[in-house]
Amino acid sequence: MTGSEQKLPRTMLSAQSGEMLYRGVGRFTVSQGRRGITVERPGYYPRDGSEGIHVGDDMAITEAALRTLKEEIEAI
Image (cartoon, rainbow, N blue to C red; front, side, top):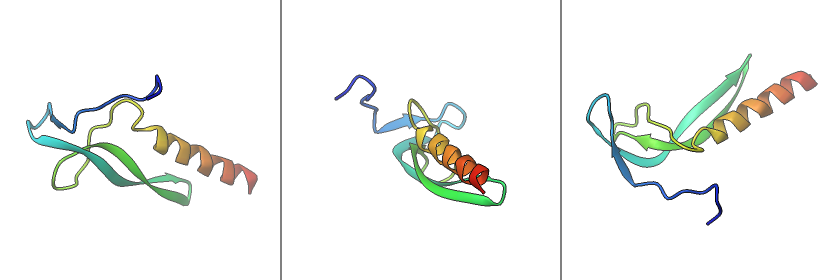
């Protein structure tokens, strides 16, 4: 394991709802202008699949997708 990787627990409680959240991935669409990319974003999600909580590097894939979209738009 490298220094940037961390071992995260499989579950956590939502501070807002008290609901149990489970470590997994959720589909999320990143949009810029009329273009969009759907990514599988890691995080803690409730069983119903609604919005989750993201910690550590969970948002890195979203940020990379946004950078890609911006680069594509600037090249057009």
